[in-house]
Image (tube, rainbow, N blue to C red; front, side, top):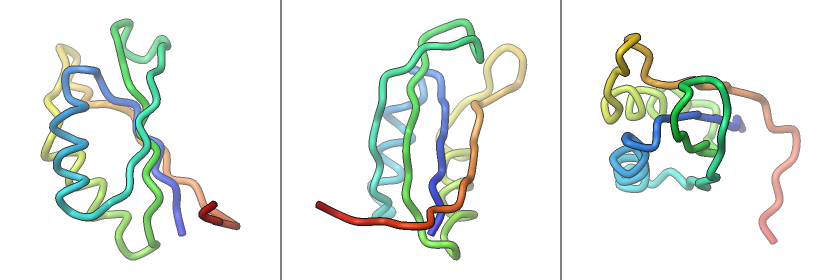
Length: 86
């Protein structure tokens, strides 16, 4: 399992969430601030099976728009050693 941490501009979050939910990805939305875009941003935490990482990233690319500098956001993909649902 992998965790995708996607930092997106606030303007793109609703479209990205709708697309990911439509594809049955489970997403946690976290309000965040930082220096990536110098504007409002949101962090999405997306737990995915190893074989679905590229599908989730493709969906994020399709449902975000480039900023003035051409950047759509920042994505980190990290391994998950343990997962439990409480």
